[in-house]
Length: 108
Image (cartoon, rainbow, N blue to C red; front, side):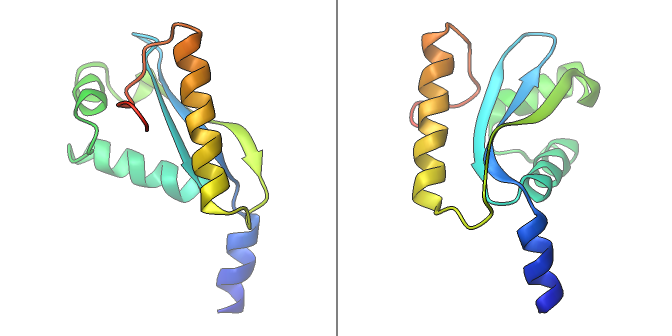
């Protein structure tokens, strides 16, 4: 149990984006554990079971090598989920205002 606590403390919390380098479309997300969340996204995409249909279709078309996963805002691991959701919404709004096309549906 102590190991899990220490491991969790080392995880990066934050807002992240997945960029399709072929189309420049972006998926914005938030998580308390980026590496775990990245692994989950990749696993679902590889198994063709991702909940974001458009992201899944583009992954099937362009392949894993066309996608870049990166943290765009990093926070302490004990940040509240409400703050993370707020930061995610702000990033979605920012990217939309910059004219970016997002995989996210309205509101996240």
